[in-house]
Length: 317
Image (tube, rainbow, N blue to C red; front, side, top):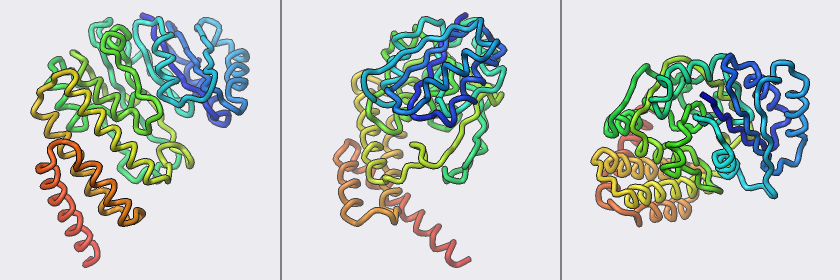
């Protein structure tokens, strides 16, 4: 089976060598590597080509170079890669991350010769992990899910990672369900993976840590434009509900998840000292304009009171 590895490239000349070398050194060799230059203004693509040309191990791999006419963002680059891919499976790799040497081999072996549509590996956080502000000791379990309700439950309970990268994805399944990324959106993985788990019929997770996710200052994950980030979260919430409605998905657990997710966002907004009172009011009103207002408000009050009690407890200690 051929695996198409899609790598968007934009302003990563300092980091992309480790990424490309990790692909070149894969123990699995039936690879089509698609590099999408998102009109990068630096020497990223020159570094890519030099790294490939100077490596003897790259000779038996297929490399394809695509370029956008103008900078369109990560989502657009991934979509370009999806349309160009010819492999049986697709794998997304961010250009400042890297794969363990047997990443693709492990994921392909777990696919049961193509019978499983999605295989998720474990990951290791590297670099300035303290900037993330959450527990980075993520554990992926060995499990197979072959019912939609089980897949959705595993996603909601955190057993399926939100990230688009580090997943082996059947290309025909991606195309059939038109699982493209929404362009111009932060947190595009949160929306895309939500759509994925509601579209797939057989998914597997493995414990092997197959991916190294690097945290660096100045990346999207550590952006400090807080209002912009919250506004993009609102778009994710809206698009999730739109997807559920358009696909007539009447899943009780999904609806409850959407309600609680909105309530948690309201609690997060209210407790964020970096936002002004006016900014908080505008963001909360935007969320409450969506459906399930009564339940969202009830959960929001509960979460906010719980947060206040936790703060009080911390001060007492």
